[in-house]
Length: 94
Image (cartoon, rainbow, N blue to C red):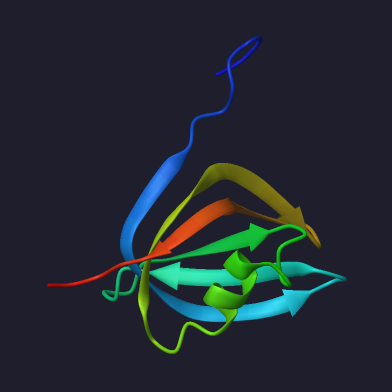
């Protein structure tokens, strides 16, 4: 990606939400993983009061498909990769 090209979106299928908390006015901080130990942090801006924010906040152990853009997060001198969460859908099993 670069000039004239948008940043790629990444999909994470059938992941477990391990942490979800409102931060700031209306943002949502999330941690999700594959159930085997790998975890990624995510942030969803201006979304806590939306249907997306409420579904993630009230996950109750349900699994989700997540999509967003990966970005570098710099906070208090630390750098980490995080997902800028754009959308989610419940993962259903048959």
